[in-house]
Image 1 (cartoon, rainbow, N blue to C red):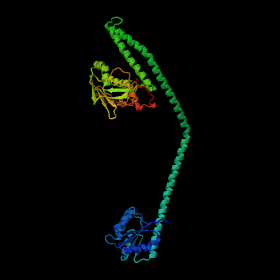
Image 2 (image 1 turned 60 degrees about the horizontal axis):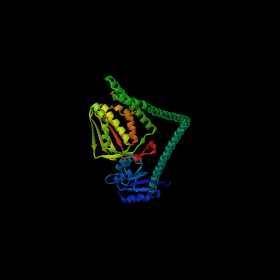
Image 3 (image 1 turned 135 degrees about the vertical axis):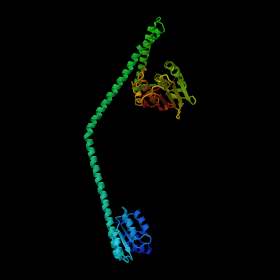
Image 4 (image 1 turned 120 degrees about the vertical axis):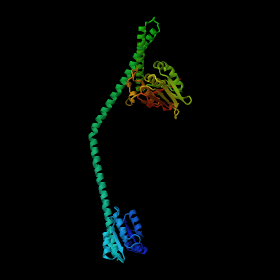
Length: 425
């Protein structure tokens, strides 16, 4: 066996260590020296040892004390110790040596052949133990591989048995996906067709009602005027719903066209204030614009940006309970725009934060008119513009909607967006 092992020689006298090395050199093993008890303990901690030859009489810490510490440690308690002694030959010393866990007690001067043979026995025993341990590790590794193989075989058998079923499920899922796409396509076509068909008569109702209210066909009494005003209001609400449904169908069909132009801030917001001022006056809310920094512009679709902000402002007025409404506008660190529309109205419950962006959902207990499509469409438009629309709200304290848009959309348009961009003429 070519494997070499370590043999520790412990003696405070160099000439004794030299003599031991000469005796044990024919064994062909690594002979490790230690000149004191503490040095021997350090060696025991550092390396694996097959046997220790330990002198009994040493200054500071004798061999018995060293052996006691070695045998008290879990890592070293099984290392064979052969005591070497020149003067402690009494039975009491020999008995103490064996009680310390020694495997032999040899008196100096010793027969070199005998000592070498004894050490060779422990070296051979150490090598056999190491081989047994190695074989045990190999056996455990083999058993582990066998278990893994059995497990893998079992998995393959299970997968093989379920392959047909999985294929059937995939086919069924594919059929359902096709059916769903067809149904959504039919729904979108119905929305678009219905919206186009309804807008003509609704516009007619609005037009004739307006003419009658302007006394084109003669004067109206108070009751007639009140009835026409209600008719006009209902027709405009219906037209708003139809337009929202048409927008939604276009977004879902990927047919929204974007006209990219410079969008100026705060000019766009100031123009919107003019548009919504009558509604704000009707509800008793004041509008204020807080511009952080100088005026700037981004490249986006001004019509769609106006549509989003108009919806946010209208909602803030309707649900703001007549309290002040603030619009905060600033250029962010990426040269895009951040716009917060803040009201002090009824607020939104935590559980309803995500539902307000679902189609045809109105979570407020307020009786304010609405289609339930404004916020879903606004969020989708913000995403089509490569931006985002989020909300923070506390019930009873109000809501803050934040629209974030990039500095430029031109570099971000890709075929996967399923929309076309038409540059302004």
